[in-house]
Image 1 (tube, rainbow, N blue to C red):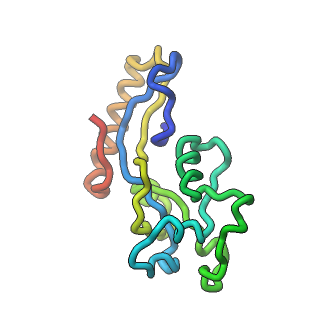
Image 2 (image 1 turned 30 degrees about the horizontal axis):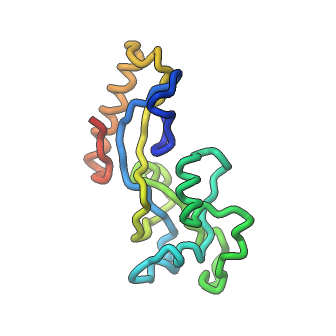
Length: 163
């Protein structure tokens, strides 16, 4: 299972992707985060706080997009943080993380989305070797995953099923 938008290329000779669903990727924070008090959040407001940086290359497209926005922070960017905006909290308490409705449903961390729209969607895709795509076991797996997502859609209206 591969998270969107990180996929093998459509013309990859070895791998193919079967889209399962899409959903918005949210910036998530603790319920008492200072940004939740803001009426209108701008990119510069987000950049004043630390944001999660997963291991390099874990999600290369997402990493590139978020770094472009200044949100996939690395130690080099630490000087940009304005600790005076943190209201005495630790970095862990004010760090912005990323997630979608599926990850929120299983995380149990009580994080809430910031009212800020990222310029790309997330989602899930099954990646398989191209020559195995039409094997009965892969076809059955795709059907099972789509059935499970259909059941989840009742609880998660942001989830858009792939056709």
